Length: 293
Ligand code: NDP
Image: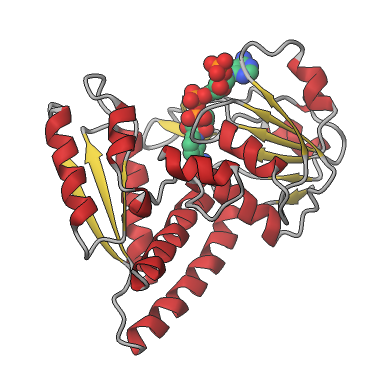
């Protein structure tokens, strides 16, 4: 089994981005600037946003973190988004999900200017992606596509099973892998909680993308010998041996999968760092596109 080392690959891409920023600075151009809006104090969201801001600093991007209490009204949040939309110093921004229950996430996503939507969640970007037009791709699926590409994994003509159909991972992943593109041309089956005999589907797959949110859900007996297994899951499970009281595990039983898979992503250190670096790539793109406006 070969490990798909997202941490290592994301560091390589960060070095490439750093060089690009240095070139931009030499040319006297404004460096990319990402803003992140964090509402409330969800520990997982805090850690994701911290890592995004830290990654910006590593590559020489500017970053701005806007923090608000969980009791912010939807109207107030929409005002912040309107300000970010019109702020010419900001190339792209994200509003970290999930949001408190009293805020409608759809309204928030729709309020973001598609040109600054570096998370790729706005229906304009989603629609363009589905039609194969240039668009900001959602960060996690973009990271996975980049990983398959850089590891030279052939996808054309392969059977791919995506487990999970969320708007941010499973569904866009299924679209990207079925597109007529360098990484694409798969025959994709999109599965979910109503799928009958998931094991039978998975066993046919040359490529499995697991995005479910249930620890160790995909077991070794669901994996065809030699398959490429991409584990998107990030689940906290109690572990008293750890200082913080938990450890992170994926949606795939890593030890069992390692016995069967040809390629496998670890958790942590697989898809997670690729998601962050994809956000940086989208922000760079937004900055370049703003140059020509
Ligand atoms: P959601 O909760 O939005 O979606 C989960 C999906 O899994 C749903 O489509 C659901 O089906 C499906 N599902 C649930 N139970 C089963 C089952 N028994 N059999 C088959 N399918 C099932 O999750 P997300 O897509 O947001 O996240 C999935 C995981 O990925 C989480 O662990 C999350 O933390 C992680 N994640 C990691 C990221 C990274 O950067 N590595 C980024 C984003 C998420 P149904 O639609 O029928 O309910």
